[in-house]
Image (cartoon, rainbow, N blue to C red; front, top):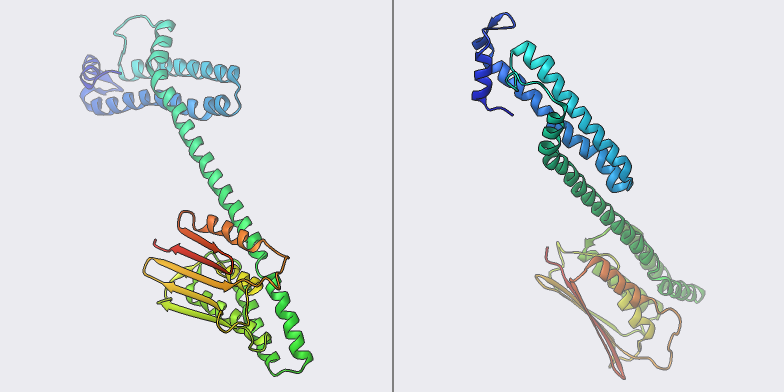
Length: 336
């Protein structure tokens, strides 16, 4: 492509351009000539990006990609010839070859060796990067969709054993016409309402989750007619804190299912500490060897998988399983 001084000299050599003096059209001529020359790299880049790259990289049709490349080369050669001999020379008096005869080999060589190693390769590179980015984004979207579906499935598996036991216990209370039956039924309604409310949410208020645990403990004490020895201790400020819903309940259910509940000297102890950057839940219970429930078993595996999905590298689950006691401690990193 010619420098401005070269174009100026070529235009200056012509005394009349479009019926006016050459200097009246110098800037206009410069803009038009260079603007039309810029169409060549545009054809090369977008031909490579829109036509060659999909066929070459996605369809893997090398012969077709080669044919399209040759077609782009032909279009560029024809376009350059047309603008130089049908526009520049007769309209602006601009001769890019200073009177030399036009040769097809020169055009092909110029277009192929100047534009293709740059703009054609840029088109291929741009398509490759864009396609890689879109594929990566689709993979992440698919991964997130699968994770959401898996979380929904895991949440649907929460608490069936506990709820069935509660219903049976409330039935026993109503059968004996206990005054606690209506209170227990209201507690169960609150628990079910909460579970339905948080089903589609990723995070909820920590205070609501702790209140849910307290309702579960209260319901269990009501249905056991006060024989269950369960202590729940809440420390720290739980306001304006967020947590994944129903993440704690599996540990409480495990203690209620497999622990000794009627020993005043060894109650089930639930402690929750809300610190500045972490949340810590500890559940300790004495093992009940005389009434081991063999059903279930997916509760802890369920919550472990949920922790991996929701709190990757931001949780620490410690389980101490000795002869007489079982303790679970979950530490969550809740920093942004």
